[in-house]
Length: 295
Ligand SMILES: Cc1cc2nc3c(=O)[nH]c(=O)nc-3n(C[C@H](O)[C@H](O)[C@H](O)COP(=O)(O)OP(=O)(O)OC[C@H]3O[C@@H](n4cnc5c(N)ncnc54)[C@H](O)[C@@H]3O)c2cc1C
Image (tube, protein in one colour):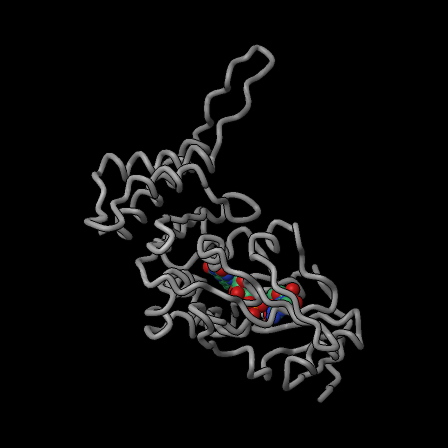
């Protein structure tokens, strides 16, 4: 079905195949899901799409299913839907991120796929997907499909191509504690100043962690992950001493908020107060997240 808006032709396909066909037929068309990011850009005069392909009627991307130890999440899942208890039982960190993603009217409309495609530093789902090592399924016209790690998409190593839609996100079901924490500059809903997702993967005896909002894409402190994974007694009591939790926090913060390189005189400049504050924030998020996951 196609309707004519004042400035842009809007098509409202009912299936994924129709949606990618509409994009292929009109290369200047832009997909729109909840519109929370897209319409903000239009209203700010940053974007003037010639045509829109609305994804709201594409039922096959609005739910989720289980597949080989993974959950296949539709890109059209809203934050409100992911925040509900049944979803939280499945992927607790993603549910926690969804509950933190803006005020209720934004969470009712905003989607997982939109969060990924926008790829804002402050996208709350993104550190969770990075820590889970999720992959993204991409669809284009003629039945073409490909799957890329979410980190490759977010770093631009393997970006979304013209005419492609995010159809699903494949997330491993780890059946172990996961935590998402977010620091904002004010009380109540707000964009993250720093966020952190931490997941336990007992089958691989691994702690994985990603820090959001402090760089253009989520950061993985891989050495800190490996260090703490080796400390955990995976077959016994998983708890760690407060000193180890604090050391992990400092390790993550130092990795993600590095010192400035030394000047020509070989002296490393002192951290500015803002950087010191960010380091303390990231350290506190990492320490608390690990403590909660291992409690
Ligand atoms: C007031 C306000 C507060 C907010 N607070 C937060 C917050 O706290 N945390 C947070 O993470 N986000 C926040 N957001 C941002 C936004 O709500 C999320 O990023 C949301 O997930 C975007 O989803 P959407 O469906 O609305 O995307 P849309 O606005 O519909 O689309 C965004 C972009 O993604 C593309 N796109 C959408 N779906 C697909 C798809 N399936 N395949 C390919 N491309 C696609 C669109 O073409 C567009 O470029 C906030 C936004 C507002 C306006």
